[in-house]
Every structure is written in structure tokens, then in C-alpha cells.
Image (cartoon, rainbow, N blue to C red; front, side):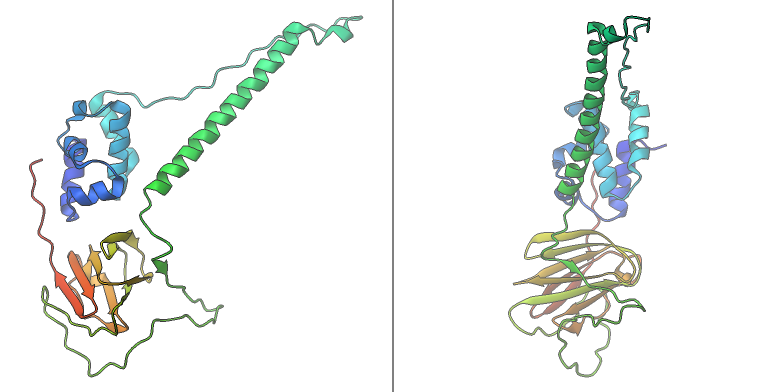
Amino acid sequence: MPTVGRTLALERIRQGLDLEEIAEYTKIAVRTLKHIEQDEFESLPGVIFARNFVRQYAECLRMDPAAMVEQFNREQQMPEPQFTVPEARFHVPNMRPGVVGRVFDNNTVSAFVTFVLTIVVCAAAYYSYEYWQARRQAAHEPVAAATVRSAPATTPGNQQTVAKPPENPAPATPEPAPLDSPAVAPGTGGNVHVVVSADEPCWTQITADGKVLFAGTLSSGETKMVNASAVVSVRAGNAGAIKLKLNGNDVAPIGPKGQIRVVTLTPSGAQVRTPTPVSEPL
């Protein structure tokens, strides 16, 4: 059975990704990623950091992070961290006739205060952990909501008109361009307006003017609209599932299903290329 590092490396290569892209998404240094893929965990700061890096790497590749962490613990012979809550013990005095007014003596008050403090500490620890989890997920979300927005969908009960980008009158339907050759779509000005839609689930990365705006899986029927001043780049893990519009005009199919393609869109047109597979020592 492959080790954790080799499993992650093989999956990364299968998806056509390089270490720089993984580092940009997870904010983990390329050097650290190489140590993980080569199972050199002794070179990392500690077991806790190594376990967290493995979890983030697996999430980036859309693998099961819990399974990867469990395999990491087995290989490193480290038990999963357990969280225990201290048991609160307090003394209840006997209720004897004539001493009801003395029930709340010093021992009882001290035990009650200890019990309340224990509950407060446990609650604070729980909410601190939830807050840390929310901050960590927000820090790793690369989508810029103000720049990339999902196109609103319509349902049978909602007959509102959906705004669409202006379309130029198209001449005769162009013949599909051959794979890995320019698929030209005339521009309508200095800016680049791109509509990306998916016919079926497809991992997609969208970059505008050198800034990554979206990296994740587009669901079937989902649409993203992007505006840029110079260039938009679209990387698709399932080229046959992606449809593009550049400045209101349809772009010819970029490739077959199951293939990786990178499309560069500028005001002058669109250029399709096949990325070179990454080959690094494991």
C-alpha cells in the first residue's frame, strides 16, 4: 500500500497540478510539500504540524482528509489526540434537623464554584475551537466574491428575468477549432468579459490579470462571470464539460471530456493549450 506522501503525490500528478499551485492554494511552502511527498516528516516542525499539513493537502486534492490523517497516524505510530473533560466532584452535606441554615458552608460553596468554573472553561474551549476552525476554512477559501459572482438560476416558480452579458450579433457559425490551436473570438473593447459554465461537475481554476479568483469544482449548470482589464485564464480538469463566452461570443470547444486544458482569453481572442505533465522524483 502506498505511503501517505506517495498517495498525495500520485493524486496530484493525476490531476495535472504542480507543487506551486498546491502551495498557492494551501499557503504551505513548496519545500514542505516536497518533504511530505517524500515522507520526510522528521524534517517538519513537529507531528502536530505534519498532521495538519497532510489534512490540508488532502482537502486541496479533494481526497478524504480523515482517511489520510488516519493513515498518517498509523505510519507514524501516533494515536489520535483525545480531549477529556475533568470530572467535577463536590461534597453534599447531610441534612440534619436544626442545621438547615448551615447547608451552604465553606466546603459546599467551594465545590459549587469549582463546578461552575469547570463548565465555563469547557464552554470557552469548545467555542474557541469552533472559532479557530471557521477562521482556518475562511483563510483557505480562494474565491473573491466581489469579483467572481455566480449567475442567478431560475426555477419554475420564479419567472424573474436573469441578466445576461450583452451579446454581439454573431456571423455564420464558425467551425470548431482543432485542439491545442487558437479558437479566436473577437473582442468588444479594452476589457475582457468572460462567462464560464459547466455541463457536468468539473474542477476549474479562474485567474484574472494574474490573480486567482476561483479554484474548486463547478457543479452541473453552475456559471461564473469574470471581468478583467487585460487577460483571463481558465484551467479546466474536464475540458469537455466547460463552455466559454468571451465578450458575448461563444468560444469553440476547448477539448474532450476527461482532458486538462488551459485557455487564455484576451480582447483579441482565446488561446487553448494542453499543460505539460509534471514529472518530479517521488
